[in-house]
Amino acid sequence: MEAMEGIARPAGKDHPHALAVGGDPLGRQRQVDSWRFEWPDALVEWSVDNHVAIHGQTLVWHAQTNDWFFRNGDKAAVTRRMKNHIDTLIGCYRGKIQSWDVVNEMINDGGNAQTALLENFRNSSWLRTLGPEFLTLAFKFSHEADPDAKLYYNDSNNQKTPAYGASVDAVLHPNAAPTVP
Image (cartoon, rainbow, N blue to C red; front, side, top):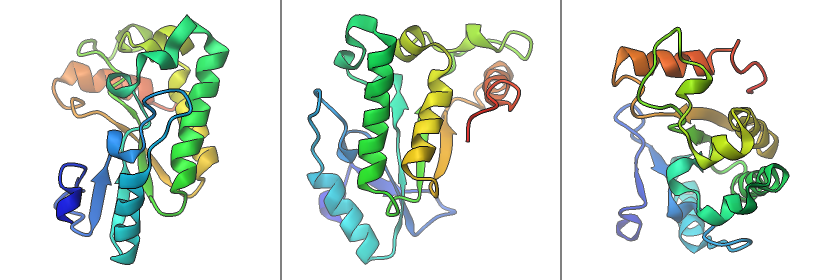
């Protein structure tokens, strides 16, 4: 496991036999149609052989999506790229990675329960290109790619302030996003 240092970590004290894996090691697309799966393949093989559950991170995150993904700002093209990205990554490990962080940190650091709708989405390339439905699309495509995987929204700041938590709750509430699986 020494070779995996820096790309996998224990999923938490409540899950000592699980790994959380993310970022470039999970085959992040650096260029159009350019994938590298050597590291994640080795990690997944080791985990399966050793009966260690894997949690995959993160499919849609403003901080790890390359600029080429949004080239020309074409909504249909970016939607196809998102679907292809999710289908490729989840599809490669379907049944081997049990859960995924689908979207990460889509909320700004402000707002409150009354103003926590569209104005509190992070002004990311995802929002500017696809609108707020990028959240629903990401979860829809992820569920289609592996209906048995558990899917999560991840945000390390959701308890930072009551306003931030209210923003996350308002956006993720079933009334705000009724079609998210």
